[in-house]
Amino acid sequence: MNEAEVICRLYKLHTMGAKLGLERTQALLARMGNPEKQLAVIHVAGTNGKGSVCALIDSILRAAGYKTGIYTSPHLLRLNERIRVNGKCIPDDELMTLIDEVEHHSLAVQADHGEVTFFEFTTALAFEYFRRCGASLVVAEVGMGGRLDSTNVVMPVISVITSISVEHAIYLGPDVPSIAREKAGIIKDGRPVVCGDLAEDALAVIRKIATEHKARLVMAKDVVSVRLVSQSAKGQKIAVSGGSDDYSTVVMPLLGRHQMENCAVAVAAVEEFSQASRLPVSVEAVREGIGNVEWPGRLQILSADPLMILDGGHNPGAAEKLSRTVRELAKKRPVGLVFGMCDDKDVDGFLRQFAETVKACWTVTIRTDRAIPRSRLAAAAGRFGWQIREDDLPAAIAGAEKWARENKGVVCIAGSLYLVGEVMELNHYRPFDG
Image (tube, rainbow, N blue to C red; front, side, top):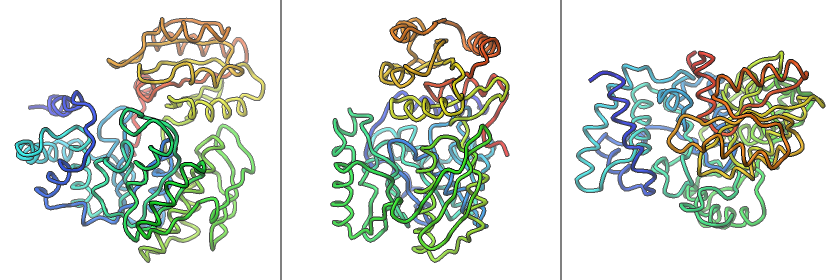
């Protein structure tokens, strides 16, 4: 069976959807010798920002000289992107070998616990790969929620919760306190938890559960200060100071004011991890890690002239941050939006954040069974009085670029990480190819 057939076989597990619970992952890892128990893990949950925080923590720890593993989701182009050691994707041959091995164990687990899901499978595969590579410091991103997420089989050195708002309500609950309880499920007995800026109803839940677990609660904003000095398409120059160290100014490639909060959470997490693990992380490593962080598809600059920005934001909260940053970078120039979305997203809530920003819009049907047809997206966008055009993706990008040149404007491409992957494919860009 060739590589494409093996990957296709694995993707078929996606059709099962989400099955929250830890029993199958625990049983699978037990058959594999519990590789997760040999790893020092920083476990990161949150509605928004968790991917950026994971990328920042990983970059800082690598700059400090540690061999790291990082597990994130979803991927943009290739499954390999989810599982990286020292910033590099798992090689194809090693991925194929591990798929065969994990599949052997998953079939045995199926008899007693039911079929293993795609995310459970890849989680177990990632932990085994990290063990084999000797990447004993691991940054693991929660897939969904926290308490019943497959990654919650770990006993982390520290836990991190970046933000909490309503998402995946059918699985996690209808309101912020319910979702906070699910995310707080990653808090473990006696292990510190670092949090971003949370609303009071979410924080009350986190504080209560942290107290029950005798877990020290650290609010990032209380121990780390990040101040914007300047911003351009090349990045943000920020001044960073921590609990005991002043990191001075550094240019962070990640754009958007929300990334300053993510940076504060990441630095607070690294400081807490260093203290808990007694592994030193120097001021220079923090500066270098922030300056070299890579997190593709999030306010990524595709072109400087005209300015074209690519972002995977797909909910109203992410759209608000994206719209604000685009306005700041556009500096009163007109903005064109190219967007495609999945059918489980809040299209009106997303578009509303761009109501005062966008002048022209191109709608596309993204390449997934869950895509909203571009005609429906055009109808939703039409309510805002924008110039609307329906097109396939290559024509939409070409049309938006032409419009931007003629109107001295800026183009933003957003609405889905599937869309980000398609744009990267058109541009022959492979993330984390190192």
